[in-house]
Figure 1 (tube, rainbow, N blue to C red):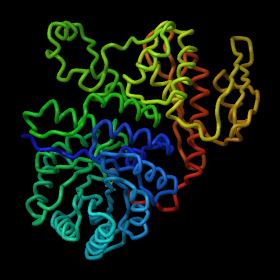
Figure 2 (cartoon, rainbow, N blue to C red):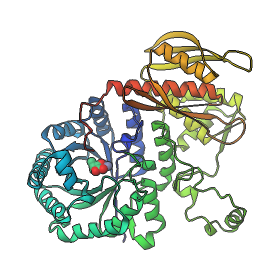
Figure 3 (spheres, rainbow, N blue to C red):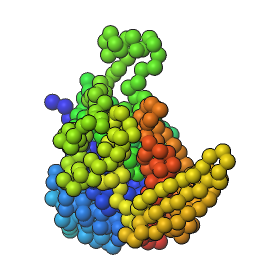
Figure 4 (cartoon, rainbow, N blue to C red):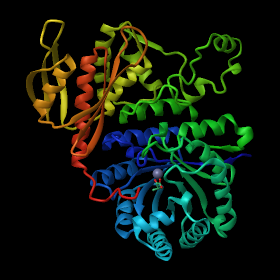
Length: 514
Ligand code: KIV
Ligand code: ZN
C-alpha cells in the first residue's frame, strides 16, 4: 500500500498574500467549501491577528467545514495564538499553526533574538497553543537557510513541547531540489523524536523550483506538503497544488505516494480561485493552463487521435476538464440550466438560480452557444463576488470616429441609486472617469487586461483591472460580450475590493516577517 501525503492548502492565507488577491469573507467561505470538496486534508483559512476581517472569515470557515482540518496562523506570541484559537475553536478539527524564524539572517536582523531566545520562544508558543488543542504545527520560518543542527534542535524541542507537525519552509524560494532533499533527510535522521510528528515542507517559487523542491522533500520522507491552488502566493507564489498532486498521481510508480485529492475537482477549483482573486492563470501553466491539453503541432494531433498516450501523459477528464464543453442555448430551460450548474459543482438556492437564469437568458439572446466558462463567469459575478458598496446598474456609452467618447452610468452606492456622466479619450476612459467621479475614488489604474473567455467573434470579454489607492492594491474582474460593459464591471469590482481592504486594514506590522 502506498503511503499517504497530507495536502495542506494555504490558498486562503499565503495565496491571499499575492499582490492584489484579496478575497472578502463570503468569497473565502465559498472557496473553503470547494477546497473541502477537492479533498484537501487541511485548510489554512487565514491569519486572524492580521485583521478583524481575517479573524471573522476564519471563524465562519471553521464553523462550516465538516471534514477538513481548519488551521489558523499565529506568530509565536500569546496574543496571536489567542486570536488564532478564538477564530478556530468552533471547528470540528482545529489546528493552530505557529511560527518563528530560525535562520541567522532573520534572527539577527528581523527578530533581534539569539538562538537561545528563539528556541525558548518556539517552545513556549507550542506549549501555549497546546493548552487549547492537541493539533499544533510549528514552522521554522526561513528553515531552508537555517543552520541544520540548530533547526533539528528547535524541531526536537517543539516536538517535545507537543507539536504534532513540524514544517520546514523554503520561505524565500532559495533551495534547489537535491540540496533540499538532502536537508530533509538530515532533519529526518538528526531529530531524535521526529517519529512523533509529521514533517512538512512549504516551498516558494522564486526560482521556479517550488514543485520540484516539494517532490524532492517527499522523496526524502516529508509527509505533509503545503500548497496553493494555481500556485498563487507571496511574490512568485507557492508550490502549486495541482502540479504536486498530478505529479504524485501520474508518476505513482516512481514516487510511491498517494493523496486524498479528488483530481476531477482540480480544474473547477482552479477556475474558482482565478475568478475570485482576479489572478489570471497563464495559458501554459502545467495542469490547469488553457493550453495544458491543447495539441498544436499536426504531428502531435495525429498521434493523439491514434492513441492519446502518444503525447498526453494525463487525460483532461482526470483533472475535471470536461470534453463536452458545448452546453446550452437560447431554448434551454431552467431545468437544464440547473442541471448544468450542478454538473459544474454549484449547489445554489432557488433564488440564486433564478438570478443566474435571467442573466443566462440575456446572454443567450446575444450568443448562439453558451459554454461552461460563460456560466462560470456568470456565477462568479452574480453569486461569488459579493458587492460590498458599489453595484453597476446601467451603462450607456457613445463613441466613434467623430463623437467625443461619453459615458452615462447609474450605480447603486450602498443601495442608493446615483447617476452621472463624463468624458474621456476613449469609451473605457470615459466610463472609468465617470465611475471614479461618482464614487469619489482616488484609485489609480495600474493595469488593464482584456481576454476572450472562449473562442469566436461573439466570445465574452473578460477584463481584469488592477487598482491602487493609498498603498492598497486590488484586482477587479468583469465579463460581458461587450468589453466596455465588462470593463465597467471589472472597475466596480476592483473598487469594491479596495473598500473591503480599507475596512479590514491590517494592524501595523501585522504582516511583517511573513
Ligand atoms: O513562507 C513561510 O515561511 C510561511 C510560514 C509562515 C510557514 O509562509
Ligand atoms: Zn509562505
